[in-house]
Image (cartoon, rainbow, N blue to C red; front, side, top):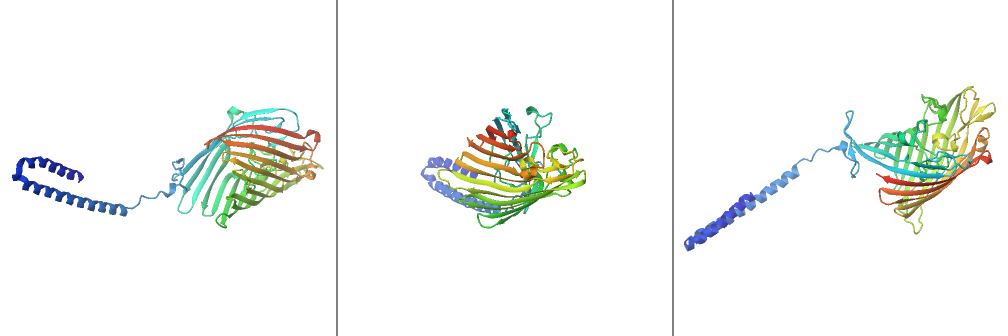
Length: 470
């Protein structure tokens, strides 16, 4: 249409010189031609406006494209990629994430663990140096939204595979760290699989891989089925209630057979965990206080028959922001707890859960169950506290203390290298050069009090870490 208008104008312009050639005798014809051209232009403009109006009406009435609810992200952020969709399923959104962490560690004594510390051994003055990558990890977050709920899942791996005779740095297999799936609808969430325990969800910030394990901080990862409910109290506050059925662990590795004949399985029912947390804001920053606990049971086949050993815990955890001048932000966090038979993956009692009794004497490690006449639980208590200071948004430092203190009276029933308590002090600094790169340094002092005071374990540990987040 526009091309036709231009063509007519072009023809009209060509006619002008011809009109001049006609002289005065053709002036009237020229005027008539110009008037005709102007009339044509006005009609074309009117027609063009009408066509545009009709086009807009058609666009407004056109049906929207079909919604792809099954592959729509639950948030506006851009996700890594989508799965193909297997076993008859539609595609799921997937986020890929992780970090590289390279650690250089020097310590002045032997410990259970060199790349990370769990228990300080009696002093021997044997210096240790390790350079390792084992805390590096990667993971995949999965999601899929439906009409009024969403499904989610996670697979996360690292390189902390259990030691075997054939293990070494250059042949390290992967370890399943977190593997779970779930459904969330409104303020309800259901989760099933391997995840952090429901109890004791706060943890101190240490460069050491296990944050104060057997030094005051309970909990680890455990296979479970968990139900969560949120209650919104006001704009900034909510109550979070969680209950879980767990798969506990309760025996030394040496006594677990190839068919997973663990006494926690023999109990015939799962452990139960629960947590109630009040989450709010103070000074515009997150704060919480939570009460948690668990109960589980182990069953041992001993000389006199089956013997049950109860396991329980009860604890309180908290985190509060502090209005400290000259700091970008600051937090005080901590936890205090008590319990019984909470060794192994509950990470308490300095890994001393029960005493196996042999005719009045007892052992904690490697019992001959065919000779054991009784199994007695070991009580324990502990705590940790941490001050977190952000000097700038990129520079943060932590100062903390923790203690794990099993009951001395229960321990006196056992022979061997018994640890009455273990505590630690730590300080570290982490600086993020940018969102992807960070460097850190940490000092940790660990003190383990053994029954024989000449065998007490003290350890000074220095650590430097390099991170690349992705």
